[in-house]
Amino acid sequence: MESAASSPVRSGLRIILPLTLSALLGACVTVAPHTPKLNTAPAQTWFYLLDIEPALPASEVRVEALYVPSKPECPLRQVGTDVPLEPQGLNYRMTVYLDRFDDPLCGWRFNQLWVGLNEESGYATRFSVVPGGGDQTRWCRLNPQHGVCMLREQDVLDYKVPGTVHRVRLMQQ
Image: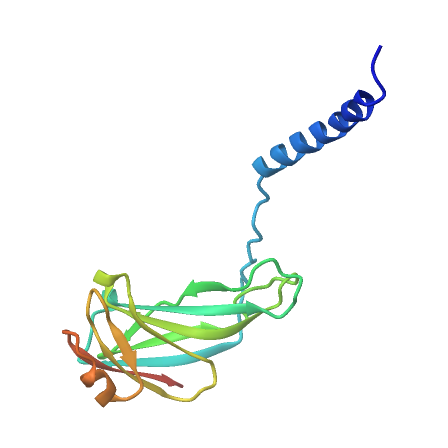
């Protein structure tokens, strides 16, 4: 015959054991992340011209458009898409789609352009600009270990790391 003291312990084990197993099994189940739905016919566009002096080949430049959700129930905080570079003389022309995503759950809106230079460093020499901020100029020193972009030329010249300095102008057209 069981004692009165052991009965609640066994009852507790009957509850705790299934809850523990449920939690462990639940940790193994992964939920597919939300994937924003691309707009198949984007119509709202902004055009930019990217001027880099001295010039860099397209392989040394990467531009990404970042979008943020306008709805708090969206499970993602931001999403980015590569922006193709269209050579135009020594410059590059870019088309950014403001309505890139057709996703009612998130209501994505264009938030910033990210410009990265120097493929060797994984485009670590980088800066970003917000939309509608007018023409932007940055002075960038390319260095595989520690590239940097700054607003003023003198600041980047004073930055004591080796590497070529480039003037990077981003102009909204």
